[in-house]
Image 1 (cartoon, helix red, strand yellow):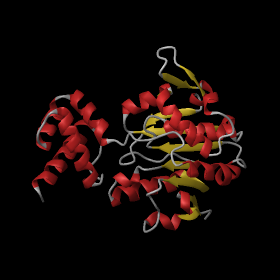
Image 2 (cartoon, one colour):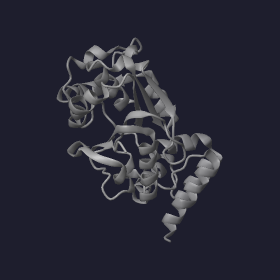
Image 3 (cartoon, one colour):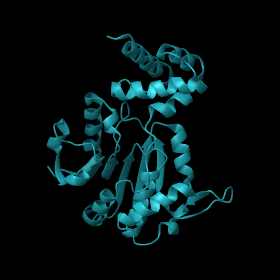
Image 4 (cartoon, one colour):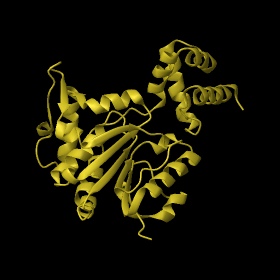
Length: 275
């Protein structure tokens, strides 16, 4: 084993033992890139030096966590995915008396709020609840506030339109009193979303979900952790429930493929088999 890879594995074991965050089954190539960025930011020259910092300085681990977790998302990212949800999935979910949605790896809440808006526009939000989870406590705190920069909202607005939005995205937020450059998502959306800590590497299922989205997260896992996460999703869904993955992710060649049928393959939407 190369020295650099050995250093990474020792660091991940130390993080797991010290802070109970499990990154040991994340894809090595991605980890190396992220750790190199963290070393530059924390002004250390080696991963071993990084390990010494995070073991003795909890605030350094908080900084490192921002590099180890995926923090890139947009509202209505990949509009075609949300258009397919609107046209093909939500009419099925509308047949249920109540709807439970799990947004796994929610980052700062962009996808969770997108799902809430989509459900609202299709008349389903009042009987829905969205569970939005992540392992990054800082991201969850940001997500729960519903605060975004006005600059980002300009891009979100175009995505919403392309996703079949039925009104202006500006109907769902208002200006912050603290800064003219910030906006806050409407309270009617925020109260339908429960943000909570959950690790796909170590935690258990959410039960009786009708829709699960976990997009652009599995690409950072190794095969074993992908298999674990997909088993969690299968076990969490009701029969006939839906799973949405990222544009570069697939159930093909996985054990989970036996539990699902392709529903909207171009948009990576799958349906759990009824039996």
